[in-house]
Length: 267
Image (tube, rainbow, N blue to C red):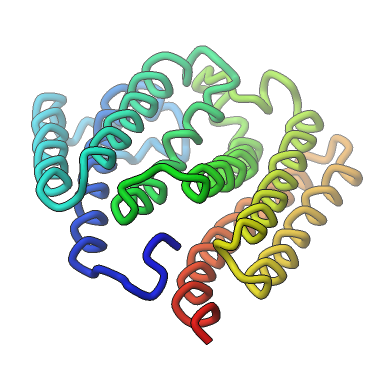
């Protein structure tokens, strides 16, 4: 979206590698912090640190190496704004999400989603050396996508989170309230794709395609909200469906940007 058809593949490769290494470092640190609760949850109990297959010291050294190499690559191949964004993202994810809010607040998912939205914005900034309207709209789109994505996972794995005493939104506010929030954020996702197009970052073909598939996502979410009573089996199947749809939609969103900016807008 930032490069249009003039893609600098060296910059692309170095940014992906550098950011990926830093994300990997953050994930290792997160797993160090969460090792005890991970051991209680079915979804995470097979993680290396949860099973105590390596020492905390070795995991810490590995995280530091990943972090240093990642920042060296970004420092020599991108710009300072990329470095600043990456540092802010790490502070939000490791500090505000993993350490401070994950075990304390039902709003931790929203905080984590801010960190989760930054890698594509970092890529955008690597090209433009600027955080402009396009970057801000992109971040809002990605934050809006992550809430229903993670809430649907939380609903399908709600017993895990209850066992680990993690105060996720569905546990604190109930499934029905969670679904209303999911509907709100999917709607926000769709509105900001319209805004992205009206600001001439994307074509109307991209807009039409994304609104159709996002509309299906919204409809399935709303249908589940209107039908679900106390049927746990239905709720789990519904949540798994929403989760799978969210993955498909974010893939189509990213691939669609590439196709739209490099092919459709150039014809």
